[in-house]
Amino acid sequence: MVVKELPDELHAQIKRLCALGDELHERRDLAMAIAHYEQAFALLPEPKGEWEAATWIMAALADAHFSSGHWAACREAVQYAFKFCPGALQNPFLHLRAGQAYFELGQIDTAKQWLTSAWTTGGDELFDGDDSKYLRFIRELLRPPADEVGERGAPAVPRGRRTTRCS
Image (cartoon, rainbow, N blue to C red; front, side, top):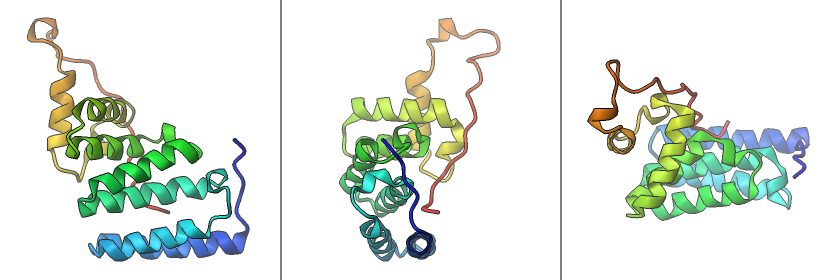
């Protein structure tokens, strides 16, 4: 897949919409944040998957849907990103939101896969700011049996950086 750069004017317009969406998200005006992210995404030329901006817009959209408790919409945004957007499959934050959405939708086996991937690539910090049940769930899942833990416990987890917003 060839990733193209947007013309400067269009890129600036998309970033403005996303910045407004980010502000609205932080103020918990989630419906308006989602509307701004969707407007930004609509501005991308077809095929949308050729643009790097598609990945960060979908991440922001998934995050806003997650914050709204719209688990299915969060899952759909993440699935779209994984299928069409450049670099999405390598993004630990998208793995986190996928795992959380599947968890909330009761699809625990799929949630385990995505949350494990998120945790192994992003570490505990990736889970900061979210309900602690997700980190507890993955830690319990990955905890070795008591007879396999050495004197110092399990090995350290790689550290990662959480990317949550559109810009």
